[in-house]
Image (cartoon, rainbow, N blue to C red; front, side, top):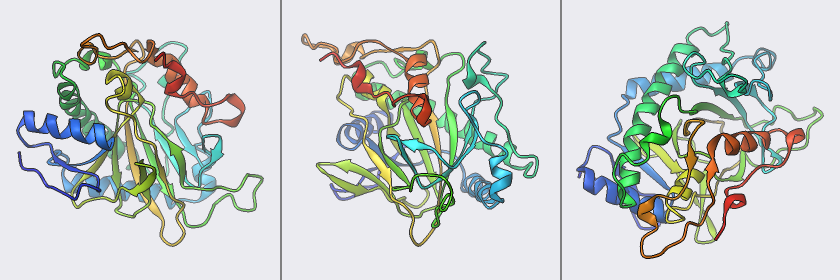
Length: 324
């Protein structure tokens, strides 16, 4: 395996082009110790990465009125928002959420199968983001194999939970220096994103290189700064359940930008709606009991999304499903 090594107190770097058994071992250590890792040898070209970042940057440079015309809501959660909550506190950021192709994910009565309102004033955004969406999907499916193998399971053990139409989505994040809601009827923002864990399986993060992301480890906040040519990967609550707590979903946050704006794109790789998440059999050897009751993904996803809006209830946590 062509691996890069870093000091023990920094997030590890993993080369996905390495020998599969060594990749699985490296992923297992990173998931158990950090919940984060840098990924190189990942496949997407630098040209694709550069084009994707340029399109996202152009979108957020548009006037606020134009972006707010694409606002998301509880009935259609895809689109723009500059008032999102994390832990019921407003973040200092703007986002644009891009859902799956509505034609591929048509679930009657479910708002998450709605259309993404791409802007007519930036026609190049849609094909660029659909291209990045597809690249992240392929990469995430590859990463499922070392995640499962590192837990002693068959490398394909997790794939069935994504069969059919999985519910992954892409989020464009812009962290401005100036709070765009300053002076409006809104509570003051604190951090760029307040501390949280991600709800789904894996998050693939592309950034512009600006610092700000931090992970909580051993009682302190550690920086997760980008590496040249790399993507940042972290695990979510569903991996914590599959692993029966061997791989804890990492608590992380983004600092508020004070001198330089920051841009990132987060691809959230989520199971299919019918999936019911439970600990893998390989984590229950020697009489070990499952730490979680069954987690119906459709229920968890809906309850977590409701927490993004102050009027729709508190944010669900994976601890709500813990039994041991």
